[in-house]
Figure 1 (cartoon, rainbow, N blue to C red):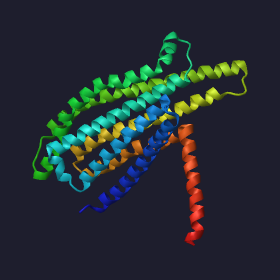
Figure 2 (spheres, rainbow, N blue to C red; figure 1 turned 90 degrees about the horizontal axis):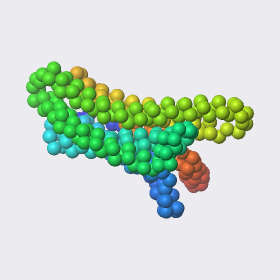
Figure 3 (cartoon, rainbow, N blue to C red; figure 1 turned 45 degrees about the vertical axis):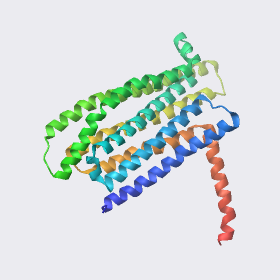
Figure 4 (cartoon, rainbow, N blue to C red; figure 1 turned 60 degrees about the vertical axis):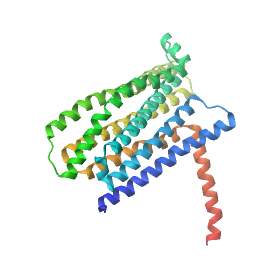
Length: 312
């Protein structure tokens, strides 16, 4: 039977997962309706839809992982089941990471303004640039899958040791995990640096634009606000990416050093915040999605007002 701490974790995790499903599902639904009406989607909407779909898959994997960790922890000792969860988690997390990177790069090319010919050339070919990024990430995905055996064996051995109450060399475990972690960190460092570069270049573009506005004494300045909104979106995704990466690292270290799966439950709860919370940041930062959300809330409010007299 689950303990009180585990029950509290399940309630909190269920709330986060439901919230994440609703937020990401709303993004997919709005863009699908727009696709049916107009028979086309903008580049930003395509990226947002792909991101929302990958995060729905990721949330389903986290849900399965949470249930196994609370109710059927012994099943982690089964190699095939552990590998199944690892493969789908790695694929969905990899897709999510790189689609977020594509979104940040898109914000940079859409909002920033530089006179350099290389920037102009890439800006006119933004669709190809955004296609090259995920295709190029498939090369890194190969290395990611190569690490799966190491991480899967790590988890299987850890839970087998827990089941048998046997001893296992902590030094060997640390060395195994650390070597794999170096490669894993390098894989996720590349999209992080691309997003960070987009943020810094947006900041430089904003500074140049402010100087031009002050020189020309312009009263109406929509481009400054566009820069600020884009920078807020990129900064939020960078922060959440750091939270997600930290939670991944802590999961392994807590299992290895503390050997307490309740600590893993807390870290897993933290990692659920990223795909759940970021969806609402994206909705608030996108005019179409924000208007659709406000319209939905208005209709729900009107419906509740109509139902309340009959209920009383």
